[in-house]
Length: 216
Image (cartoon, rainbow, N blue to C red; front, side, top):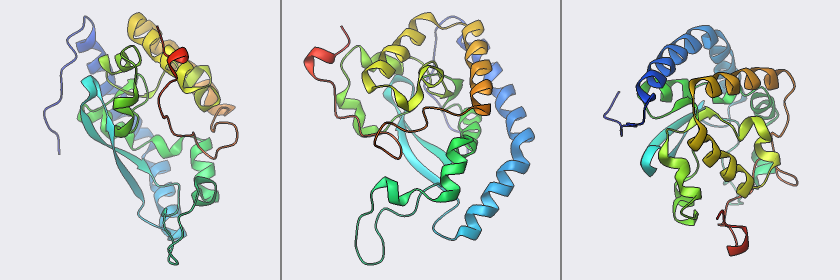
């Protein structure tokens, strides 16, 4: 169900919103067979719900529910053990992540107005208090399915570098830049890279920057 969203009142935001709506609707129509096949495969795998939901921070730091295809087993197993991400990530999940198929349900988030096609990636709610004031500027725009940081290293770069790239995007946004990011994203889908951080199945948790590492 659609709901009232915080408004981005910057010049060009209305046009960006129209592009997002058209792009998301077209994307869902084109990728629906892939989504259905992926959902069926996840259901057959039988280790949890097909759709994974989680609260994330969006425009102006407001919370919203993000949708993804499930790629991991439950964190806690029957014997009470807590599994690390390296053990939770399924074989199918690795494929879905490598192909970015797990992100397709976020097109619905774009239609709802939670997200944009392009913008800083929406991160966990608990990260909010850990940002420096400059890093928190990433929330001056709607989060995106892909973004400037994603086409410049994705999870292979540090959190601090990601946030520098996110803030650069905020300061330099244009429709031409969005088109450039979408084109580079499409090219990267053919040669996936930066899917996980070194020594991690996904990306290690952001605990905040040391004072010397904070963006000035």
